[in-house]
Image (cartoon, rainbow, N blue to C red; front, top):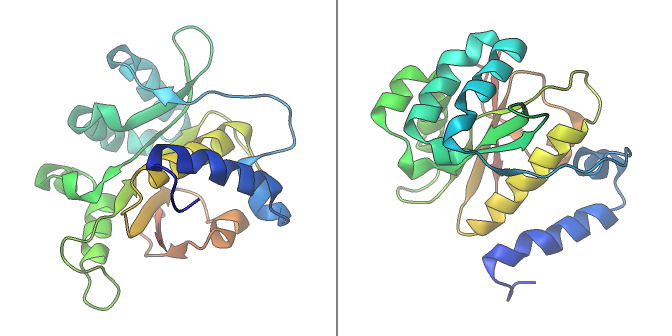
Length: 201
């Protein structure tokens, strides 16, 4: 596996996750329901549907998501619902691409950047990291969800395609789930009831 190309590592990891004998972790990526969902890159005309999903599920974050879309539209990956609908999405970029303007309008990203360079818990200057700022699905409830699981698996794919990254940051407005802890994530700090979570790779 160490000799595989980065673009193929996620496929082998998906097989390992499916076979792992740890129900909490396995169900986070592969819930028991039989439906399948495809995660794909967002298109420019997806912006209205994507923002409608945010308005429905988390209206307080509309400005933050809009700022991300304006700065990094190619960082968005999504699952489509019906025609003209977005059922779920997430964003991920290398931390080095974050701009001063984005830090100014997004307090969570600003908190991550400060944590990344913290002398007591950060990484050395120049060490690569990934920021997965938002993962939002139309599904509700606290149990394993198909759309969220599909996005999580795609996050892992993106992470492995940036194999040199030393850390992955993700954010969720909910309390971290048992699966998050099982995957090795640590709470990096709370901000306005949003809990940035970091994992060392």
